[in-house]
Image (cartoon, rainbow, N blue to C red; front, top):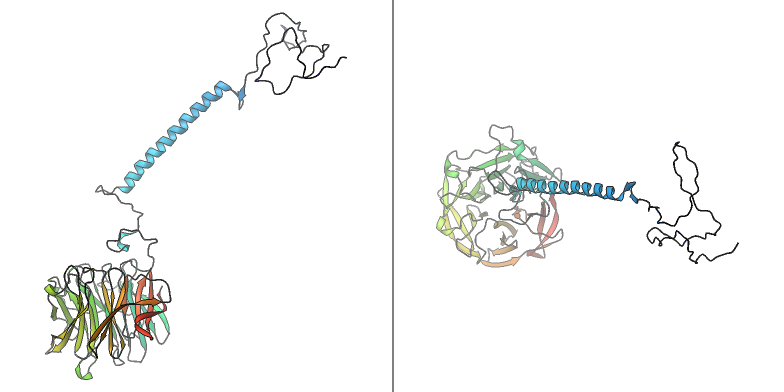
Length: 465
């Protein structure tokens, strides 16, 4: 048998052009004596029988096999694919249209306004704060104010009280007492919830508190404002050893004279009396709808005394009452105007009333225009110095050293050392040189550094939570 290279091309009578599409490799070796493959044909009887096919000099009738994809002829497969794509595209278009319609209805209120019910509760954001918080508060109402006091009860037990509002607007108190040497929490709103007149403080109400700071007294009072702009108050007797939930209403003047101007601030303190032969009484100050600043005292709660006329005080001025010495107190307030100044005035008890004293000290001038975010508190850092502390609208906390002996003033920004970085939204202080501030959903406590009383406060601990 003669051998041939597999690369040699053979000519046969029925040769056709090479099928470039169907061929995958070179043509196999075929000797001349190799018989032709025979197709199977069906005879008339329905049985298969081989039949020799003879070469003929005519065009071959052999057809290229039909191509298939996934078992279907090409044409049918592409028709099915096109139909399926039309169905999918139609479903996607319908879903997008439905989603847009749903979003429009979701963001549009009944009055046509656009709002998202899943946005953070606007009641838990600071007024005018358009920047969404990085995370919503879970412990403390974002616009909550702070109030604090301390004292010693009849039994010689010392205590500290810190008041604020939780995210629901309830009034909360944290109490530290010397017996347990620990902090405890009470929800005053819940404690009085079953009374005939449940507590109803407005959200973001100013808070003011006073306590008898001497060992012959035993009382803590708290004032706040309710939605109709009137003042309400509660008290706790024997605060050093009483159950922390035993708060009760304190009866105030029943007429409308103690209505406040919307946005009014509150302040309170305990005032000792002349001669030291009595425990003294509480004082609270507020801004009346007339714009005047009035003071009410516990010895005659039905009588208001005019302290500052409306023309001399900014609308919704921050306020702070400071006990000076028996029968005398200071009042810190803001003056009206486009720049705003912070003034200290003293008042002297006289024939059951109060006369303005000789002091009219300008503490800080050219402050930003009066703002509801401005807050005052104070500390008696030493025997000769009163420290007035102001939280300015830009977030800076400054201390004004009022030297009573030399009648001099000095102002410095406070450096808060230790603890987390701070940007306080509310501040308070008690009469035992403890400073408190709300920062990032927590209440932190500081005390003046003994080496730099008016310039540096040192971190003590976290009061809440």
